[in-house]
Amino acid sequence: MATVSMGEGDRRLSNMGNGMERSRILTIAASVRAMIARGEEVAPFTVGDFSPEQFEVPNELLTGIVDAVTKGETNYPPAAGLPELRESLAQWMKHKYEVDVGSDGIIVGSGARPVLYASFRLFLEPGDGLAHGVPAWNNHYYVHLNDAVDIPIPGTQESRFLPTAKAIEQRIKEIRVLILNSPLNPTGTCFTSDELSAICKVILAENRIRENEGRKPVMLVYDQVYSTMTAEHIEHVHPVQVCPEICDYTITLDAISKSLTGTGLRLGWMALPPALAPPVVALIGHMGAWPARPIQKAAAKLYAQPEVLEEYFVDLDQRIADRMSVLQERLGKLSEYGVSYVQPEGGIYLSTRFDLFQRLGVKTNEEIRKWLLESAGVAIVPFQAFGLEEETGWFRISIGAVSVSEIIAAMDRLESALRTAFDCEPLS
Image 1 (cartoon, rainbow, N blue to C red):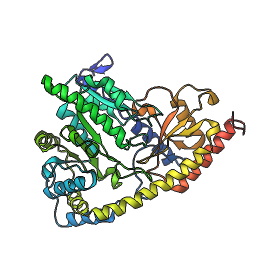
Image 2 (tube, rainbow, N blue to C red):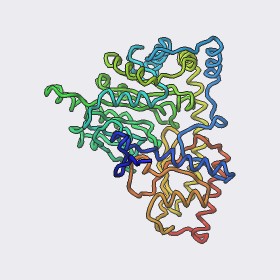
Image 3 (cartoon, rainbow, N blue to C red):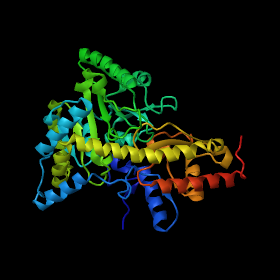
């Protein structure tokens, strides 16, 4: 058979296809699942998923799905989403975040990813600047998918790994779309009102200049899929809450994937100025990226009951806190071995540093990751998977698929492995 490969690519594929990368997170997670299937003792702190055994979706949602199927709700839904769901979500966004776009400004997708992709396609031309924080989830892949110019805005440990207004202002002239995520995946940290307000002011100042020059504005995509998960005394804030003027330039992304722990149920939505909705509806329709009708019917009923949702969120936050407190306590006792973490503020992630380079005689995060996996059965994801390419020792720990007892067992193994590796004595 004749070969059709050409150089490092395949001439049957587009340049975009030849440059496509698989998610590093999913690659690591697949190898961990294979180890668990072989019977190896591994704590899967890898993917941002939820084990149904640990985190159940609301019963009202499940019964609503079954009821909808039983009643024959199995045909195509409208591309934008069922009217009753869009209305429920619009009221929820207004109630919870002071974002009032009406039902016409709510577009539903099969999870957050289709509406995320649509938000980039809606605004980006080839060569436009897509700015994002580093570390952050998968943005560098979306730069490639949209033939955009990558504008990484690195965070620091001092900024809790969040991009700052000052850093954004330094690149604002190059930016067409800025995406922010809070609580942040992978770090579990949240923007404060002051931090978010400062960023909004930078965008608005630039957009006033561009309006006078007849140029397209900076658009803000705000990914808040973890917004209902915050640590005690931490309040999630939305850009419109701290700066109402930003509303005309803001696209909000949300989903039940994380807030209702229903990652496999695939329902997300976009809230945007209604005048911008028609092309999004068309794109979602062309992709066929709408959620199944039964999940839409069930979600419409549930989101019309904010008191039921709030009760669920309180319980979920407590379950997350139970796991985070164990992790913090146990990791805090390992500081003499070069282990540290950033105080968690929201979501299901803990930013943890394993500064083991000198102690293990290694140079890369990947070597540390493999050592932790093989020596302690601790499976975690390096920050390289989130765009931070430097060898810093920083990793993401996810608690969505583990019980408290599994965390304790994993920390026992980790402590034992560290003590064994360092001759039972912490290094000063």
